[in-house]
Image (cartoon, rainbow, N blue to C red; front, side):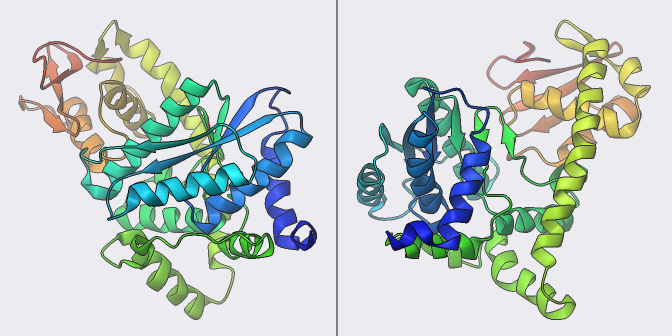
Length: 334
């Protein structure tokens, strides 16, 4: 096979091989595949690498139902994945109706479906096809939105069941790998729709930066993300310990929160809001800043409405969260 000798194929396979190094033999790993070049190259690499490492390999494709013919397309992608030798292959249909706009709602629905698919199949990991270019776009979007170090740290290589083996691989490499292997990726028309901020970054902003500053901008942004992630992980560990000390059952002590450094306090509040049911993709730095005002700028305000029907409240020196469905009752971790 000529494709097996392609440098692009080798690079993608090596990235997947490294990401699976600590997975025990016999375990099942799934590739999340939309049919696009990044995830299709990833799935093909997993199909090659996994059996040679003594692992089982399957795949999941998610039909968001946002375009005509999406169910048929998901079926075609599933057929391609089976043709690669992946088993099991699951096609999952989701309803995109959550908060935070269509992109955030689709992401929330997709990740929930992938997580459930992994649990149902008994998989220990789901591989995602995000590339170095995706990472660079994420950093630029975070910078433009003023989202702080968390967003500038980009996407983590691992979080929970999800693993991103291709964060050091360029998008051009995945496209070349598909071509070398004779695979025909699907081109999502949304990827050329400038109504979406990420598409404008991809098609307009990054090329303009490279034209003005020279090549290597995407690599530099991804490198910045890796450096900031190291710092962010330390702060998140400190925040976890601080939250434990500030918590009394479902309540958080305002006095304990007020005594924390700002960078730690905002992480504690974000963690608590997520634990109360706020969707991660819809909870912004602006939301967290308004929660923080209940601690540092308290003047008797009634509370802060948050995505997912969650509300942050302060009373008697305590901070807690309630949901729309059960007013007055706490939800989740706070």
